[in-house]
Length: 350
Image (cartoon, rainbow, N blue to C red):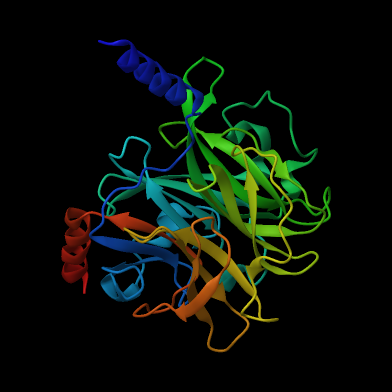
């Protein structure tokens, strides 16, 4: 090996070593897309499939893919479904809000569900009722964010991000960063963003930690790693300053998260109310697509708009097509095998 080759090899090794291993959910497949969402027809989880990411058709007519009460052991409704692949790419994970407004008639709830599957059809789950306090968590001796856990009145819209760098007390590495909004009316003035870590089995959860507090209510966060600037980008609904759907950035999952730019946000809905943001990329595109629900109109509109490669400069909103009752949800790319499996399953259920 000559001197020039050695220098080049050393430069590549040094550059690789200098690049931090970023947290990321595995992406796989370019055959189609899965839209996993709460149904606006009821508080259950539904699937829809698409070949191009914009035009969809329902799985089993948009009905529930599982009995909600089987995985929502507190209130019997599964809202705000978020789906992703497991860190090893061998399975699938889902996080849902355990909540049923049609039954309770109040916009309060008390916990979340973590679900796992090997085939997207059969699911197992655990439910966390935050009112029960420290001993539902796997680190009960850690500091508490609340004095009175029984007063928790909201735990909303959990989402999941694999973090290979997280270190557990026993020295093992890797965990699922689970983030959500939470509110305890007796101890804080509004909904704030919190996070926990789930273990590789997706059955154990650490106590909540405050992610950030911008001085007003924030809900429905959606985090993605953006290669264009090597930052984590969070789309979120904020209700202070200029209300709407905004983006924030951070060098790591736990922050610090920048304050949103009030000049760069999803502005084309005017004063109509929007929430439930979900960002994804269509295979082969450099930019991003942003899904969200505009819920103040009748009928409601689930939109998908464009953003540039930095997840900025939002344009070209259009209604999602082919979905019966679209609502707050998430998107995942599929392989041909996965897509066809769900289509076959749908036909057996219709």
